[in-house]
Image (cartoon, rainbow, N blue to C red; front, top):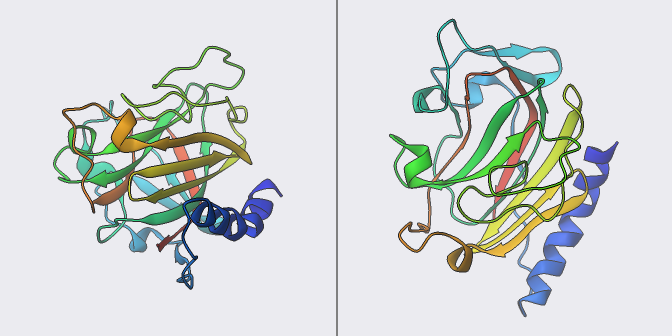
Length: 211
C-alpha cells in the first residue's frame, strides 16, 4: 500500500521540487520498467521468482561487495533520473543502490551508494546505515521496516541535487557537490546498479525515467 501511494504522489513531489528551483516542469518522460532478469546485466546468482521478484542467493564462497560483475546493472548510463523500486532484506542483510558510476570495474570507488541495510530500530545513524550515502551523508531518519518486509524507495538525482525517500519518509535531501568527499568526482552521467553483498536480498518493481 505504501509503495502504491508513493507512486501516486511521486509526480507531484518531483514537480514541486522543480518549482522550488524556479524551473517550469518539463513534460515528463514515462517510467521504464525492469521486471525480468533479462532486463539487467549480471553474473551474480539472481533468481527470477513469481511476481517479478529478483532474489539474490549467493553461491557458496561468495562474500563481500567487491564482486562488481555480480551486481544487478541497469543497461546504459544515466545523468538526471528518478528510480523507484521495492526491496527486502534478510536478518542482518546488506545491499546498496549505486548511481553515477563512472567505471564499472569498481562501483564503490567510482560511484555513490545509498545504503540498504537491516537497521530497523537503530537510533544512532551514520553514513553506513540504511538511507545513508556512503562517505557523504547520514540519513535524516531511520525508515526501514523489519527484516523480511518489503520497503519502497525513490531516488531522484537532478544535477547534484539528491532526494531519497524510503517508505514515505525523506531520508536524503542534499547537494552532492557540497556533501561528497572533495577528491571524489560526481560525473554528469554514469551507471546504476544494485549491490550483491554476498547476502540474500530481494528486489522488485524497479522502474526508472530520465529527467
